[in-house]
Length: 319
Image (tube, rainbow, N blue to C red; front, top):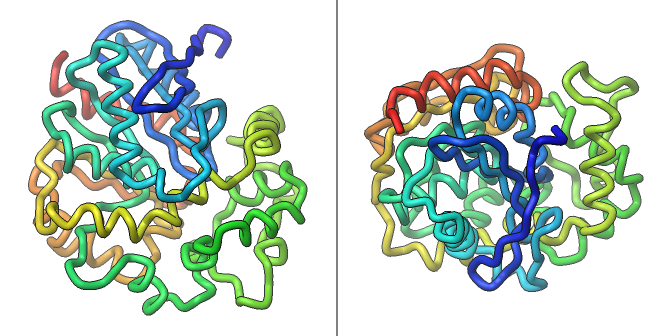
């Protein structure tokens, strides 16, 4: 880990913290919520040892990167703009792209907006969600899952931050990262997430106290508003991306998900992934891997297997 280099790069009007190790064809890793560049530590070390230059930023709002105060600064266009700016700053025309959770959503948009910059994509947990022309995403989720659904609960600025502040950040990170409940997270309106979050008495074998401390220290310093702003900009992204309605993802893709992942157990997800909808929207989808007994934080829970899946896929495309 000490061989991983860190720097700050000026991109798209913000300062972005970037971790990097290795030389060769570049692989850009995009993290989700509530994670950081650090979620990719295992894959960075593995792939850098196999001849790749691995790059993992803290996305805007996270870790040591800048966090603009307004949720309107967190649309997919902003985040993809940051990543394009990062590639330009590093002098990279094209990269292999790897995403998880919110990072996966951003990677889908990256491939939609700028397929010319991407050689191939390995995405985890969140399948592509084509834009519905007549219903906003939060409205659709509220109709399907109710007001207590976590995405709906996250919408009100300050509310979830207040809720999270009632929980020790170390305990909160343990609860969030080790959650294995496949059912979609819902908390009744009269209950806070503090009542819902249960930290395990002992950490799973794939998470150390040192790992938790890294995440918790960053969030104590930064707070959660930046990460939550991605959810709060969902409907604005929907408004701004009308021009891409019906557009397909036109880069080669491998998709990996755990069968205990909340995203995989959301109503309609399995049908979409396995019954033709996914392949129709992502015509160059080459492989779907469902890992048994694996929950949401798949790249941390099964680091070696995920590193191997990424390597097996991207090495087919040469440099």
